[in-house]
Every structure is written in C-alpha cells, then in structure tokens.
Length: 300
Image 1 (tube, rainbow, N blue to C red):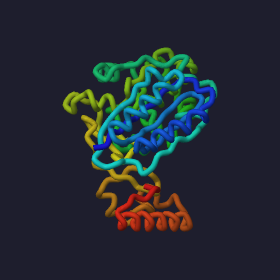
Image 2: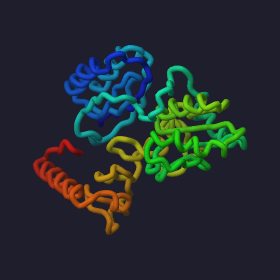
Image 3: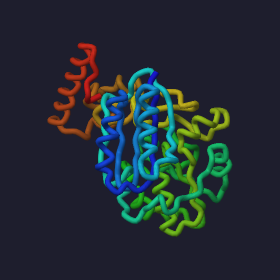
C-alpha cells in the first residue's frame, strides 16, 4: 500500500527557490511522487509513496521556516497515484489573485466536524462551497450554495456580485482540505463580514469523522490524486478522470459518444480544437505503448 499525504501550511518563505531542490531531491531518493507548490506564503500539495518515504519528506518539511507545527491528512492507495514528482515555484500556493489576502493575519472561526451539522442547520447561516464547479458537481453539503466558479480566482468577483444576498447572515464556508477557506474567510473578514466560519480540516476531515447516517454530505468528494473521489470513511469512490480536461467522470460516462480515452469526454468535447485532440491521441498512444512494456508513462 502507498501512503498519500495531503498538506498545506501558510508561513513566510523568504527564498522559496532555495527550498525547492533539496525537497525535490529528497522525494526522489525516497521514492515519493506527487506535486508540491512553494511560494513566499508557504507550501501546498499532495504526495504519495512508501511509509518511510512519506515520513522522511514530512520530517524535512517540518524543518522549514515556520513549519514545525505542520498538519497533514493521510490516506492509502493500492496503486501509486502519481507518475512523477514535481516541486514548483508559484506566486500563491492556492491562487486567489487578491494581493492583500493574508491568512496568517486572521481567518474565520474554525468549526470541528462534529459541530458542523448544528451550525449549518441554523436559519441565519448561509453555506457556501468555495470549490470549483466540477468538484461541486459530484458532491456537496445539503443546502450549500454553488458559486459556479471555474477556478478559485473567480471567487472574489462572485462575492462582489452576490454579497447583498447575504446581508445580516453568518457565513459558513468549506473546501476539500481547508486551504481555500483560509484565504476566502480572510477575504470576507476584510470585506466587513463579521461572522465567518469554516470547516476545520475541510470535507476530508468531515468524511473521515462523521458516519454516513449522521452526515449532511451527499455524493463524493473530488481529490487531486489517482483516487479521483472519496466518500465517507475516505473510501475510494467510483469516479475516474478524463485525462483531457482533468474532470471526474463515472464509468457509465465512458459509454457516451463524446468519450475517447485521454482525448475527450462529454464535459470537454467542445473545448479543444482538432490539433489539440491529436496531441492528446499521441499522448494516449505513448501511454498504451509504455503499458505494453510494463512501464508507466510519465504523463499519467
């Protein structure tokens, strides 16, 4: 079994580029794959590998400036969910595009999973899903508002266009693991919203702790690794991934006329031109060739 570790931490890195190579080299040495983002505001990503390898990488990250209290979420998978290791330098570890947002200064009230149902059931609380539209489509909390955003960068604009709807309301927000809510709650506080709450540990913590019979969650939770989706108890869900648009699909969606493995699905059939699709087909041919040789293509 492979251990999967999802993590994020807001801290100050004066020189993220100096952190990158030692972190990447250690991951490669330990047989760890996945993706980590480094920025001046901190670190974010998901990695997978043998137990000892994950322990070594986590231990290294905890030695970085301000990361000694790092928290992370673990799961397991029978197959390695990532084909290679990437450590990338970014301007933000989760892109919101608002310069003054600073989760290190102030965030909303953290709500433990066991207290979440009581909060969101109250009449003066509005519940907002801060994730992307394709994530919301396969599962969300009962009664949650879907902003229909294609990326987190669109959230501030959506809020400005809709904030009058929530006058005199307390605002509860949630996301997969908590990172987007660190920024969105800071943003709303800066916009003058007085009572802002977010789900501690995100959806993943809730699904791990709250049994299905007591849950306000319906559907599956999209995750950014080879599992694609998980349900209660973090059990792997039924979804697969369209490797053209990176959106989740169900096995039944592969029977649709729009589906071509690695090239298109019903969600992206009109999004790519013929030249792009031909590149996808070539990539798919290379993946099949690698598989026939008992290897894994690095593009997977």
